[in-house]
Amino acid sequence: MHFLSVLLAGALLVLPLAAQTIPVINLWPGTAPGDEASALEEKDLTKDSDNLVAGRRLIRLGQVFKPSLTVFRPPAEKETGAAVLVCPGGGYNILAWDLEGTEVCEWLNSIGVTGVLLKYRVPKRAGRPDHAPALQDAQRALGLVRSRAKEFGIDPRRIGVLGFSAGGNLAAILCNQYSERSYPAVDAADQLSCRPDFAILIYPAYLTDKDNGDKLRPEVPITTNTPPTFQSITQDDPVRMETSLFYCLALKQAGVPNELHVYPQGGHGYGLRRTDNPATFWPDRAADWMKFSGWLKKP
Image 1: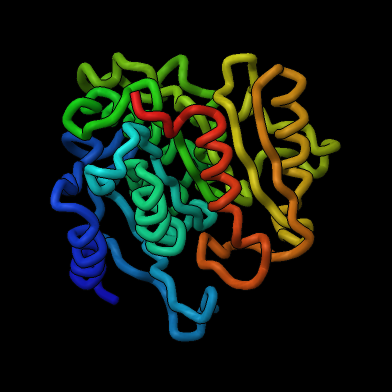
Image 2: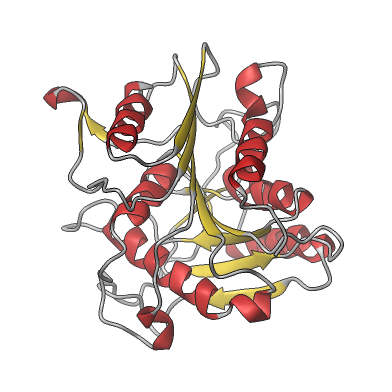
């Protein structure tokens, strides 16, 4: 699929959700920090030989040099005022754009939550930590959403983050690296807090060091101010459930409210495409957690 086709597909997915859907918002006024202008075209890198998920194809969006936000607003009668920044996974090489992005925003809308889909930079940039460009994008995104809360009809004190796999890693880093921006301030939005109010991590990757007793990686320095967190993973996940277990334990030791669901099987990368496998029912548990925690309570 060519770049234009990806854009058209995105437009078709966005427009029917709500008449109030906000157009795509560029994160940076010019070239993203640390990057140079690129002649590469953003495009779907999926091949015919790539695996299907729940019998369906997915968009593997690659060569992203112009990060952006797309805001999916729920129907007015369902709005709770909560919002969630959605970070698709893809190993910091591609973005699972529909599987862990647009489809997730549609689900969030169904429970009255505004979904803000983050298109962060991929692939990894040579000479920089894998997560570094994406973290700049995520910090910038959270500040922008908070600065435009009134415009988007959301409560600036109820903005969460939801990430899958590498996107879960990004979400966890954002939850623990928010006191200082990792780039020079651009405008007033960068003066606002980029700390998420809560986090949902689905089969998150790269949180611990397997060769060092599963010690938490330095990118996720958990403190008492790390946001309340929900996690879901399976025992047969190749990213290893220990990643979530040790992250959960560290949250507990810091006194941070958190909930962890571990399913016997399900592997990795199923998004929220439901099958008869209980692991794919995580959205129900996450919605229960958000309701119980008060994030979905209308002001």
